[in-house]
Length: 392
Image (cartoon, rainbow, N blue to C red):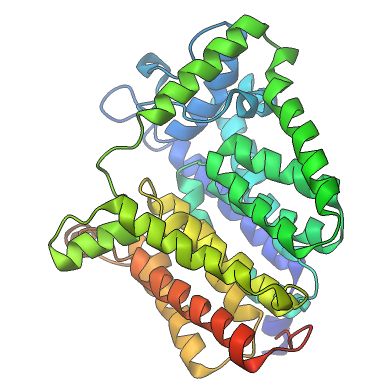
């Protein structure tokens, strides 16, 4: 038993498992069924990312369909993100897919390993906890793991007072998905706020202009116009796997999703009003956890692979606090209903006819969001936590 425990609580073991599973999933998505419906591949998102930079180089509109390339969706990321795909663009699909998935997974591994103040055992258990959702996200070859890694690295940079590094990481996250900018709210907790604003302006301009290294000014202007037009038309009637969908499921009434989004946002942002708690590490971790959950469960476009972000948020909350049976029960519910409910551990009929129809993935995360929200209010208004809480 001691050997097993030592193996589990080892970064080398976790790194090995993460790497092997990521490579295996990449092969699984590439080899068994290379296409479906005769022309679309199962690693659709990687194809979108790979060809985005090629379209940019060829002066083609990046934001229109290119079904002949094997992707059924649209590229919805910034022109700057396409530049960062250059290392993958000219690789054959399989090695490119493997490298892309490893980039996502191992960056999450590194981001959690470098979290400040946490004990190594807590970080190792956190890595094991998120493994099922991380691998499910990897199957889609999306960028959600990369997003949560950038969020965590931004927090670590702020904690280490590396303001320029934090701004660069926020810029990278925003280049991937516009809501990446929300992690910038962390700047409120740290000194040198004016420096943060100045760095943000400078680095923001540099990131927006970065594609000029490989394309013309007129082409870049056209790409941004097309991107903004696509984003403005992306606010549809869909509710995704979100709190809005959950309310619709259980009330039978089509609620105004903007009302729910605004209410959830106001409640989340209200936790920033406790200025006297800013110096408490436990408070800052809870805020990070809360925002990681909120940014997905109140997103009308959220889908199953995005839930690696709130799952990490739930894990951060649990492993950064003194543990009790109620917290453990909630953690197990998140493991089963959020992470494993989309896996083959449950029959296809149950997944499609029960779990998918009631959006089961969002329920435990919504409960965790409420619990963390209450905990922040309790700690800040009543309990008055110590400067650095005990880390388990």
